[in-house]
Image 1 (spheres, rainbow, N blue to C red):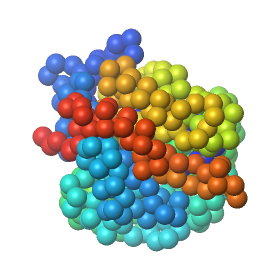
Image 2: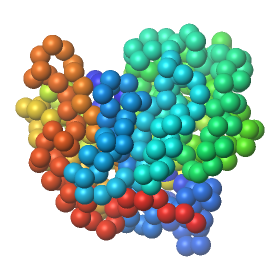
Image 3: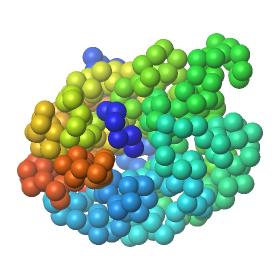
Length: 369
């Protein structure tokens, strides 16, 4: 997760028909994601969460983290979000996925092929080039077999916030706007390498029979850098590969940021692009949040406005959302620490009890065909 740039996550699936703001479900359409899980009826939303950990590396979450969040929100989470960092190990995270399933949730795994948590740097060990060359196929096939043998549904994404320069799979580190070093000269090399690498990962895992994986294409709400070659659309692997579209939409992520972007403004800008990109795909806001203690706005009010718009079906293709319930240190001044945790703000927790816990249209469990 980038600490300095606003972003949002969305996910979509099923057959839908275009409206002013996107797609509405067609009568008689298949209201499932590849027959694995059911898409909620219009007006209902799945509720997930990244429950926060200790190290900030997003892979050390615990059942206690989930329980604490769910108690404050007043509702269980349909999925639990986590990172699988390959610099710590390349095997499927079976232990974590198993306890998530045991609590009644679906694991949502960010497949983080990187050799460090440090951002804004190129990747050598797990580069797009090496993925495309097949150098990681042995590890990918082993991961896929373990995911297959896990047996129950999994959300999985590679290339979190693909259009964000902070991550090494972004086009900035892989050819940028060049068109002569790789692939089709009609496409910029950086995004094209990502697109093909993600296709290769999905193809490889499907060959191992991992049909229980729901594949998510996860972008940031804003392109960074904001240049034509880096548009999120350029990274899309295609409808044959992707089951859901995901988006990150963040407000101010630290108490020091000098702007206070509103959720509605950011979603209104990115939603039509996602709806046009995958007209038959469902959308989920996989990451959203805003920091406490920024003098330019109130965290609880920001969250209430965001949840209110989601509940009123302003973006019809959105079928779920997950709050980023984490805190982290930004420098040596404790007043500059970021917190998006319900545990740290009673007003924020009250907003979630009102808009999540008390509402029957917010679903705390995945339903199945």
